[in-house]
Structure formats: structure tokens, C-alpha cells
Image (cartoon, rainbow, N blue to C red; front, side, top):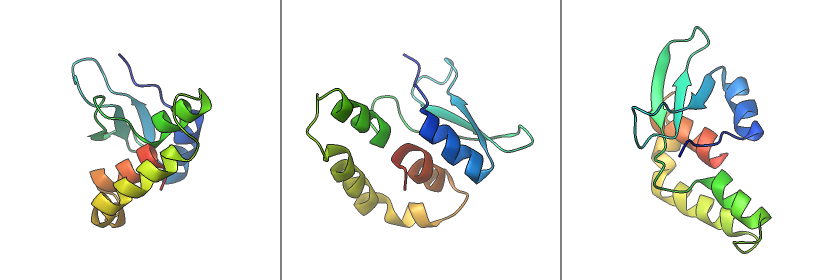
Length: 102
């Protein structure tokens, strides 16, 4: 199943100066492909087997998850990955920005 990129993620990518697309089928587990402004490939990020902030937000919207659950899961992610989120331009930094809205 192809990962759905939200409009909010597209806006964040635009601010960061990168282009994002759902990962191609040959890369079985990645969610997103990231390219720089010249179209050169940078990274695959995310894993389709795991949820992210935007998936949790959708679950809240559909009333499948309790309100505030997405923010709770985002705080847990930040606790585990805070050092990666600080290293600008890395795969972890892009994950924090594009998958968790940090």
C-alpha cells in the first residue's frame, strides 16, 4: 500500500526546500523519498510498518483514536529521537520534520 502524503507535509517540505514523493514500490518498507531542489535523491524516510503523527491524526479525525493521542505519540517519539531531530539535514531530522511535524 502506498503511503499518502498530506498537504501539511507538502507545505513543510516546501519550506525546507525539498521535494517529497511516496516511496517507489521497489523499496518495500520506506514511506517517503526526499529529493533536493535540483531533483537529486537524498533519503528514504519512514517505515510503512509503523505509524507517524499524521496517521495518528487521521485516526483521531475518524474517531478511531482518542483525542490527543497523536500528540502523545509524538512526545514519545521525541523522547527517543531528540538527538536525531537536532542534527539538521540528516535522515533523522527530515523524519522529525516530515513525519512528526516537529
